[in-house]
Image (cartoon, rainbow, N blue to C red; front, side, top):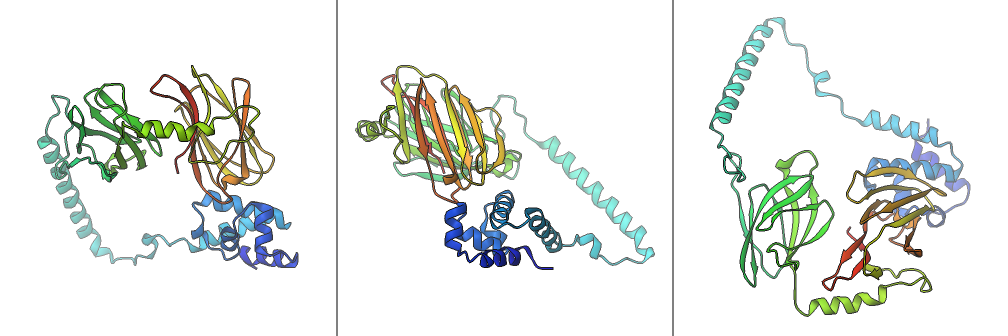
Length: 365
């Protein structure tokens, strides 16, 4: 039987279609189309994306998608490694008592070590972070250059401010990155860029961006980027550059920038985001930092989201999604990214230093 890649390539060639034409009509990048036909799963960011593109490409060519998916799954199973236990040769029966005895001795040794370590583990009576035995807390000092490193619980960062130095201690690397500061614990989520006030003067002092953190294993630490916040002329320059991005109903679509200001007001209020899909896309969203929802969408699907403070959007093949933002009876159209691009966007209210609220779109990834 032919492989799924051969079937797709033959169907395309039978229709006299070249890869560039298919890419334009399906919004699937040429790289992904070649990956499907060559059965190269490594070019895709993950299996859900690959399966979605495979189904969409098959439907476009008039090939039964279930047949193609069945061939793909059969190949994936065949290429899976055989469990090591199935390859072991049967040992002679007289080895069993010896093996059992050695196993029991090994288990007993492990138990003794665990008990010893547990008893000797330092207490945390004063509420400070205890660094596990064998791990040494590291100390860093922030400068005017960006700092990027994988940080672990107990690590300390010294931040030079105009009023003196402030010491931050990493307190949490599970799901969210947390630091102890003189004003309390502050948290930053994965793929979030936060401006933090660490000395309580109501002005942001540092910018924190978390690019990697585990939701289940805090021993992996967190990959974090830190930058001192410039408090001088940079603020005025930023506002001047952002002003043209403010839209009114008559202005039309929002220009494409790394950060866009949708509107300004004296207060923040709920807003609605309508996502209209023009092609295959794996889409996930989270509203007001609550639990996220994820699904696979295709041409004609529509998702409506309403947030009080902010919405975070993850998407593959992001140019297949058109967003309409509705706030205070005004609507703004937003097209982002390009075909095949995987992107993370924040749409949220931010409060400026002068008390003005701005609804902004920020590209995070």
